[in-house]
Length: 282
Image 1: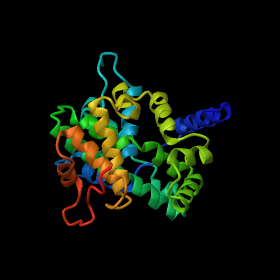
Image 2: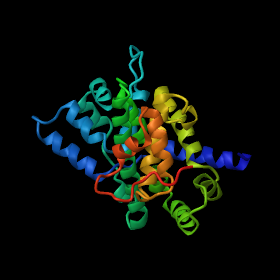
Image 3: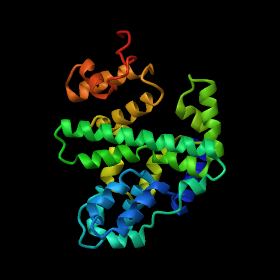
């Protein structure tokens, strides 16, 4: 990366570190509803509400990392555990569910729609990673789920704070589907989102475990490979179940779970969908 692009990346990391990350309005509504009903207000219910919002999830983890007790010797990645350590009432007071992405992107409906697509894609990736971790007998499956949920957080942040640049990238890729995402991002932003992800996780002091699980370069580790495959499958299937990259995803998933690619495809492909297939043999 050139010195100029390094400066652009550093400036963006500094900006996002200072910024008040917006959250989904629906999340705030769910949390308000729980707070109003003492019978439903519990760490588990609050965690369930937070877990669907990647932005609020990372705000909570950041806060906890920056306010560690001296006696805390282990890193916390799981949301419910974080709430138990912090306290539910303290969460409401210290990590408020605001501002809203809907307000941040007011008047920019196309950018908001694209952001919500990324959030939905992250939900799908998190669900895949969770399911596969359970199948792999990973006792810490929630950590894997969180890593998949947050993997594309930089893209969400860029849609929130730099919608014009992201719309330009989106338009270029729609016009020419052969363009590589990293190349287009570097052309428009001066860096790619994977680089931004690494720098943010480090700058924000997020748990080292999360840094490892979200780093595609550690895909030799089974848990990381789980996250990478979940993110890839969610991204490719978002283009339609006839996406050309899906057969390779099924093969890779079969290798991860040690099952035939056809069985892997059956795990993730909707039963009512008739276009799912393994494509032509390579």
